[in-house]
Length: 532
Image (cartoon, rainbow, N blue to C red; front, side, top):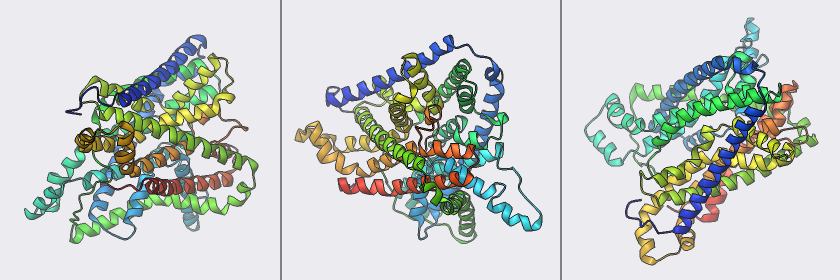
């Protein structure tokens, strides 16, 4: 931050540096555990032999998923920016949940619609037609990814369009720009800076996809490295192959994430809006309505399928003690990991706000934020699993701590992306007043930052909680019949062909996720009496 003395707020600087160092040490310990295990446990070679085809297939499906997700997101954002209708805010709120929506919920919804006994086949049956098993395989995976990531990219692009300065819109309207000129001169420049970063994030999420590929992959031909690692550990107990696969995945993810970290968005206060509505007219407005309906149906139909099928089968699941045990575990782990992630995000965001742009200190504070994107969930879980074995600790005993810590790290990139820009914007806006009044760091937080940052804190808490609630990657190596979360219980139900139980759990996960996104921000907002 320009104009800030390097000795100002030493406590915040030290806290941020210590957190970044602690996370770096932890990641290093996990990588060392992977390397030691790779030396100690030779691979049988079965999984490694096909590693080239696994990487190629994962790259193909991730590329297709990314292109289609960006395209769907751009069209959704364009239509929602131009159109106004009752419930628009609710629709945008639902799109916000897409990034952390449990993947298994979307999988369950797609199966409810496109599965052998799904709604589409019920409609086609009188005509002697059926879709067969088309939902399994490459296009099933791509469809699930586009449903999740298209909505996620749309949510980001909507904010970019809403952040266009009003003066620019007024000037464009006074010059009489037609829709194509407006798109080329005003909209695309506003979106262009976001597209590479969003595309890199989506590609990584799809390349490392685990629950979707595990359930809809339809066989080894569509594996990702994450699924291959899981199968090497859980099915073959080939730790050497798992380590080799994990190291390849780390290398590929690092090659993508390092340049992607340079594409960070500019500092802005949470929820900034241009405040000018400039709709299209005539046939173009009608086209936007049609496109919006089609795309929203693609996103909302799986969710409706989950509720329709799941709620009808919910009573037997509620009578199972294992369900309540898994629910309690999920809620406790989700709450603790969300609080930890937000605490880390605030500390790192405050420390980074004190660092000038382009400095080494600022870059080092950002390193732990992107650790997850470079170290995906199953690799992180494998590292913890091996570290526990190498230190003589029973994995089942450390499982709760591992899940809390790993889920907090997994959510940290998204928590940081939510909290860091407003923290930096507040520091820029109020630093002269703060220094002139001689406020202490605690008084600065209590009197200025906490009341103004309640909205993003609530949103970040909701993101981290739902992220943990839907995690299947970390629990996949630690889950047992005695230690289970809702996603693990749901996956076991799928594996045991108890489809009704799986659909009921998916419906409960969906209701919990949406409730968290509605209630947690409201609760925090009320606690802080947030005002911008």
